[in-house]
Length: 219
Ligand SMILES: [Zn+2]
Image (cartoon, rainbow, N blue to C red):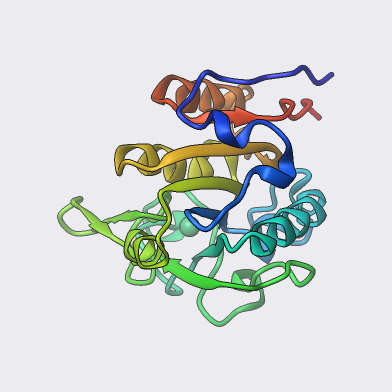
């Protein structure tokens, strides 16, 4: 079952006609649409992950038609990192640099900058910041600078996964002063615990993120 969901967030401009969603001061941020998350054979495959690619491609087309920037984040880990269970973290090995799993989904149209995260053993959930594995302090990625250089003030976020990297990226977007919207039809949750995805949506709404579209049905 899906039901309509629209939060009173900071980006009502993004909630109307999809063809009017974008403009030169908007950036479409596509989070971690990579084989290990999106492909059913990926090591951290997100249920339904591959199904969002055509929707994301349609958004890319809309964005480019208006002069909006399109930016991709890419989880990009070394073979050993405290982020992985084998090295003391919580996640199966995924998105290792220069491997198939780290590649962006093959059907995804790539028409913009790629910002990598987690390259030096950091926990990299947000596209904007990573957590230093030694000191635990957040360190910025190049995303904010890339967006600022392109003149973006508003963000439309989609990708994988709702309850981790999409959520962290959208929350950081709001914190950094961007009017931020998330496309519900173009995200999917890991749901390590049942309900994680919905809790993430609530957290984003509370923080002022505008949620657009229908909630993904549990499957
Ligand atoms: Zn990762």
